[in-house]
Length: 387
Ligand SMILES: [Fe+2]
Image (cartoon, rainbow, N blue to C red; front, side, top):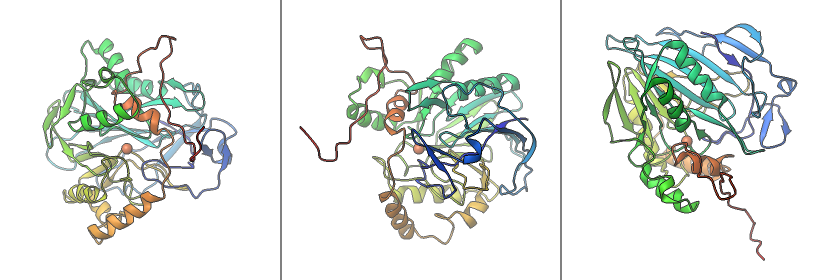
């Protein structure tokens, strides 16, 4: 399987709140790009097929260098797009085939998880491209997912959100509409049942009409509710801490954990959003780390430091031994103190307001106003000024 990758570094990594330590130079509108990449759209096609025992720290192998095969439009020219396919056969239980696709502008892992027996699949946390410099929305990342689904011959039965993201816009609604046309039925968009708390809170904060966000998700998962992906058994696991509505999705020996655990060298997600709670995140993280050693944890983001490629999964065992925030020796008290102190120093996510307003609508666009425009709202920071 081929994929496209370029390298970037970021001034701010939203969910983990990390700053890149690599050498970067500033270009307008909040993206720092490694100098050697500002010259053009260099990309690397690569392939990666780990076996059960392969260390996730192993570097993937580049097989050729060429230009991206899609137009980058208004999106920053150095977007990363890494993709790999995994066939997971760690146990005798039925296991999925997993395609992971990295969206670098927001450092987001998107997943297509399929039952190889039936070719039925789910999409997890797809990204809608948004350029905050020009307020331009494009669907390059989502269209890449659709192309991959078509190439694989999958039928998408569900689109799953781990939570209401605050750092990128969801492509769920766009994908649902496209898939409805191509598949002849509407794949439901699923999320945790506590999304209604989040929708109410931010709907009021941004002054949205209730009918723009109430009932926009098709499926609200109960805690630990089971569902199927073709002939595979899946489960929605409540993992509060980063947000109160947060779910992970366990499919076979894999958990797609959203913003709970990240790669071991990054640790965990921030807990300072409304309804976030460091003690809850500790318990959610430990719940994941109590799974069997071989279970793969697939995070919702990666923010690789210079010299490391984005890594889509780590085993429970490796996380327990190496996660910088939640390895086995860290107590709840130590974690809560660390996380609280760290969150205190973090900036707000770059796309916070745009993300929340779109994501509590399940990715639907704001209704057209009389002017013919679709509008988002941005609270001003006045630093105490008023007149
Ligand atoms: Fe998040």
